[in-house]
Image 1 (cartoon, rainbow, N blue to C red):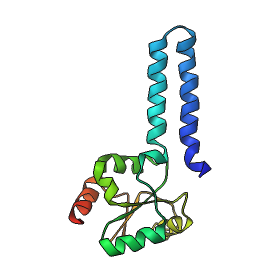
Image 2: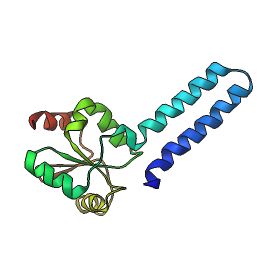
Image 3: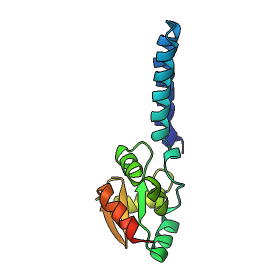
Length: 145
């Protein structure tokens, strides 16, 4: 859990440091803009930007029942963020597994990626896809109702 928040907290600290200079010089507007940019980056790299994670075993069980894809991800992963943003509201139709919180999920990812924790990794109908094109994922989500 702590590891998932390290990056966002560091971004907040860096943002406060970057904004301190302009605030000290009386450039309030610049300081506010800098601080807001770092806050937005911190939120985007935090677990808050992703749908609620479930355990790998539960996600795979649910996916087998209703045919929805399972996404294995980790906080701070730019490719995971790209996928999440490109999916938009459709992201809630997938089951998301945070591999830093769920060891079984990390094992699945390592098993299909030659021992590496390469994310995002999707399971669609029992088949694994590593870092797939977001447009392709949108098609998969649209085909499962």
